[in-house]
Image 1 (cartoon, rainbow, N blue to C red):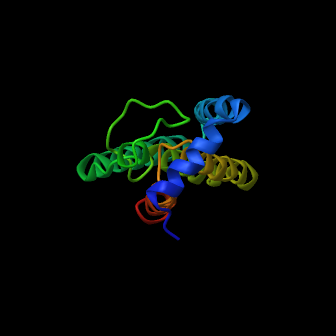
Image 2 (image 1 turned 135 degrees about the vertical axis):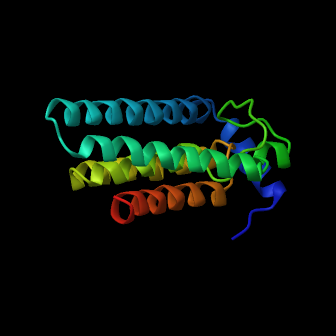
Length: 167
């Protein structure tokens, strides 16, 4: 299903006219990003303190995946919805281009794959946060649906290849 520029602008305009949504969407976007970073740092700390052999894998695989995702989006340099359809996004962004794939979403799914090496329930929580973040990034006007879907797939595939093929 493809959304036209007018439909996209109408959705963002409707959401942006609601003061609660205008505050909650960017706040949740930042909160999930922060929780992901803190959760991942805590996870790596636990692996370090317990001298787990997973520490190196759970550090290197997400880092390499992040670098690959960053390189792909930089090479493609696809425009963001607010550039294409000329509107003010709900999630404030000054970046131009580099929309595909979503690096935020790729990162959270790479981290979910790292958690999967240790604990399924932690991985499921991270994946759920990834789905919520994906929705927020689209409705916040900073990514198209294809950007977040590709970001999730990149994270899952790069994580699977890193953890199950190369390591």
